Amino acid sequence: MVVRSWRHIKERYCLIGSRCKTCGRIFFPSRNICPYCRRRGELEEYKLSGRGKVYTYSVVHVPPKEFERMVPYVIAIVELEEGPRITAQIDCKPEEVYIGMPVEVVFRRIKEDGEDGIIHYGYKFKPVNY
Amino acid sequence: MRDVVIIGYGQTKFGELWESSFRDIIVEAGIKAIEDANIDGKDLDAIYVGNMSGGLFVGQEHISSLIADYAGLTPLPCTRVEAACASGSLALRSAYLSVASGHHDVVLVGGVEKMTDVVDATSAIATAADQEWEAFFGATFPSLYAMMARRYMYEYGLTIEELSMWSVIAHDHGSRNPYAQFRFKTTVEQVINAPPVAEPLTLMHCSPVSDGAAALIVCDAERAKDFVSRDDMIYIRASTQASDTISLHSRESITTLKAAKVASEKAYKMAGVTPDRIDVAEVHDCFAINGLILLEDLGFCKKGEAGKIVAQERIKIDCEDFLTVNPSGGLKAAGHALGATGIRQVGEIYWQLKGDENCRGRQAPIKHGYGITANVGGSGGTVCVHILSNNRR
Image (cartoon, rainbow over all chains, first blue to last red; front, side, top):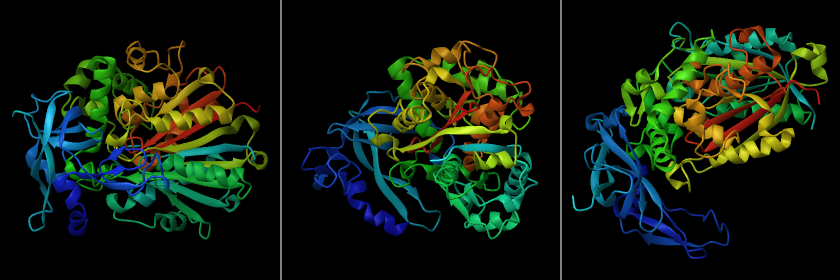
């Protein structure tokens, strides 16, 4: 689990995805193959702005063990202004969230691997002008 | 390709089977199927088993060997097939292909899951989603379907009352099924006021955590005459499968399951039928919203219409102007023992098309002789469709 986290530092800490030079589509998380162009595609790193809107959301009441302390929390799919959609928590009260809500990315602690394990960091989103 | 028929089916009760182990329940289902098909173990050529996660739920991998061993069927080749909640029907598809191709004549195909032996089932179930880009951030499996429901409500104006009617009908059907996990009826008010799991879904919009096993005997149609009468053979007229992105967020639309559309369109073509010829369906309602979406994606109504059809109770066994949907009670009431579900769905259709005595009190009206199943893995990353028929062509 520790190594898996190292591998994702670029994506989870800096919101870096990929862009296909052939068709111009932007992907997050990054991909090695463009599903539209396949071998004709060529992917390059692409930094996303971190601004977007809530596409859909839910309020989680029954969490996995690692998220028990946060209940109830808002999980959402955010549509980024560059196009890709990503799953993340929204740092707001459950009654505040709505479809279309403008949000921006923030760097947050996500969870821990138990008492002695490493702390996982990554992105959440917060309402703009919060 | 040869014609392939189902000649036997057996299942355990689904539910909290604390007195039985993983190996107990799959052996029980297998023996029932073998007896129902009037075959002997020595007639079998191979075994396929659908199982999502023996490793996480009971700490046991290599279940193919375990099952052949405890069924007393070594040295038959036994293969475990995994595609999350669609594991069962993928095992059936593997068995179907092996018989249709002429490689095997008689195959036992099972599905099994023992889910109540672990404490944190939520984490184990979440492995059907993308671990690195969904579950890592706190998305639970119910929350993915909850996000589909929320978006569906936004796009089509579905009400929580309409959505809740799905569960009410499921429990009505389940109350008539002796193998069902839940045999009590419920009301829209009870569904809406149940404890929230992932808003807008309450506990009563969610299928339960279940133990259970189910098994079918599939056979070459010619060879089947050695074992059963014509009336006891149900033809597999289509077996299709499609994939989609593992993450919900990567899909163009989250109010449709593209893999279900692709797989069912292929299945109708393969079987040579249209949706209006289907009398009875078993669809994958792991969460109520998925039942509605599948009614649309399988071609039984237009996008956005399923809520009204459900609210008018037209999917009920006793209603004659639409097809019957989930006469078993579906995953919601009959239970959802992940790897067993795809087999249980097909087993129910097998019983329904035969007019089997196991369907007493919940027999769907059979006019054209066709039934369909749709089994979904994850949030729609895998969908497997089967069309069965009691017609010889």
